[in-house]
Image 1 (cartoon, rainbow, N blue to C red):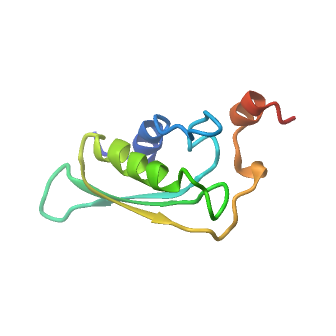
Image 2 (image 1 turned 180 degrees about the horizontal axis):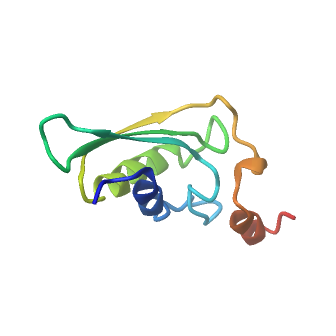
Amino acid sequence: MALHEDHVREALKQVIDPELFINIVDLGLIYEVDVLPVEGEEDQNDVKIKMTMTSPMCPAGPQLVADTKKYASEVEQVREVEVEVVMDPPWTQDMMTDDARDQLGIF
């Protein structure tokens, strides 16, 4: 079975923001997940992730990046993971899923 972006996003739901106690996917912190097949290595892929933080000075930033890399790396067929933190576009509450909004009491 070919690796798909959804497999990686599902694994990233294990990364929990330590201040909000919600996973980074539902928070809307994951902007892009690119799965790039490795030439000459069947069933091996490199993954490039663009993510953001809830604020530029997020104290949990280094932990969130490390956990993102860790859990994406554990997905079967992933060889290497690159995580890039971007601040454009800036994160807003509109990027959260309905589940995340419900957990935070935002209606």
